[in-house]
Length: 166
Ligand SMILES: [Cu+2]
Image (cartoon, rainbow, N blue to C red; front, side, top):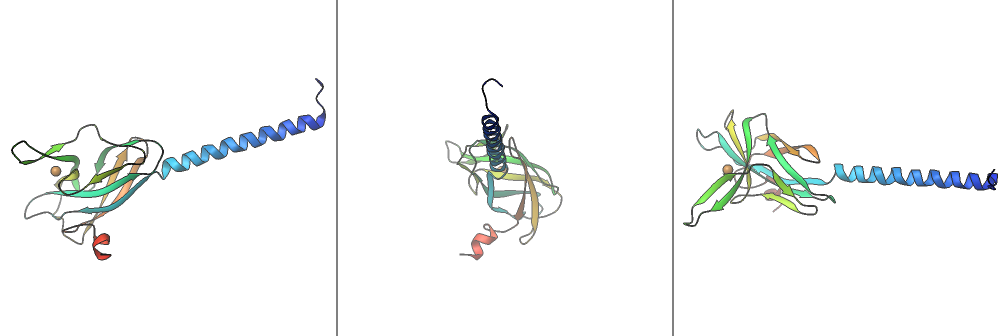
């Protein structure tokens, strides 16, 4: 048969199977990496003040993957909307919040930090007041990673876990 012995054909078959197996393995590894590439830490939200029905939420989203992603939007059952805001300083020293349209990119290996005085997630139109000690669930929507649910404790001055370990 074209000069190939049965043993040779068997060897080719084994080699093909090994190659296929390796391809499947690499494929699964890449897939697993895609899933686990985003890490959310230090999430917390400020309590509402008085009759106010807006509050800011903060967290750090680290992209541990090999590809960039984009935080497209966020939502929670407790508020009408969750807006991404950036805080900027005007020329005359006044802090202003600006709504970010079109999402916030997170490069591979970089972190997106929402923190007081900087970018934050604005909970707009809350159903009830938010009190310290409560918790809410935020759903983040990423361009590649899909949706990620984040537990957000309400605290007056910082992420509760970090302050208790201090
Ligand atoms: Cu804001």
